[in-house]
Length: 257
Ligand SMILES: NC(=O)C1=CN([C@@H]2O[C@H](COP(=O)(O)OP(=O)(O)OC[C@H]3O[C@@H](n4cnc5c(N)ncnc54)[C@H](O)[C@@H]3O)[C@@H](O)[C@H]2O)C=CC1
Ligand SMILES: O=C1O[C@H](COP(=O)(O)O)[C@@H](O)[C@H](O)[C@H]1O
Image (tube, rainbow, N blue to C red; front, side, top):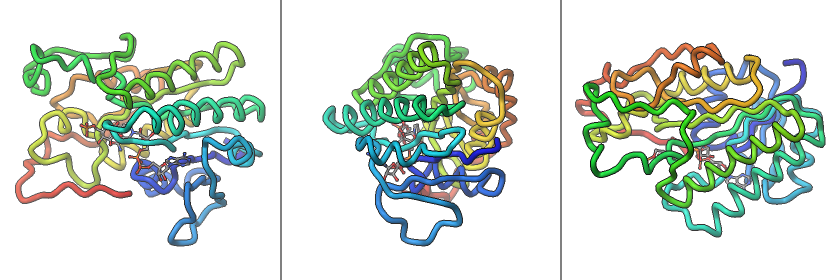
């Protein structure tokens, strides 16, 4: 990648995982919502993805986008996801295609398919001996309005890819935690994404050749109901971590942001 990569939501947990892991591997342009507490090592700007001028400034001169900015709360209200997630993502795509950006990596979510976790399937589907598996080819099935907004972001990508040719990779991120998987939370352990695997899958999404993809972004957990085969095959994702390698004794979940 010769041109800088725009990273929106750079100050959040996923942004930190990416910068800690692959901060030296690319030239970055970071977008923060509010001024960062410490001076970043990379070019940056402060702006809001719902403001067209901010988004146009953000994409100026970049060759690829990793779009993380938005409201990440599963319980987020409609007003917030409509503006921060749906309209913000649409504005990002508009500006990206106008700028001629080649690649757009979008932070989708497990919550885009959360309603597959029916009462009949759970908690068994969170366990290693259950064979229920989603592979990314299924239609979205959100369990909340946040999930609706993430599924809509994927569909926006489908539209901008088909209409304008921008390459799009939607990563349905599982549950990112630093250092070890969530404690006493089977669902979170089955969809754990370690910090280094998070950085790795985003590097793969920047480097690989593809047209339009939906992949799951989780570590290589023994317990998983999301397939990572597509991410391995198309992106070359090579996860290093597995939630089954942690016993969880005396550990607490740490979250950034
Ligand atoms: N952390 C996780 O386990 C998962 C995260 N995701 C997605 O990954 C992305 C990043 O999530 P996290 O880093 O965990 O959240 P976070 O809340 O730590 O980071 C999000 C960042 O986006 C910024 N932001 C929010 N609204 C904005 C706006 N209108 N304009 C500009 N910046 C704005 C915030 O200031 C924050 O720095 C989100 O889109 C979320 O939906 C998806 C699945 C799992
Ligand atoms: O999309 C997201 O998913 C993770 C995992 O969901 P949870 O409901 O099991 O916590 C969530 O932690 C994160 O905030 C959200 O953005």
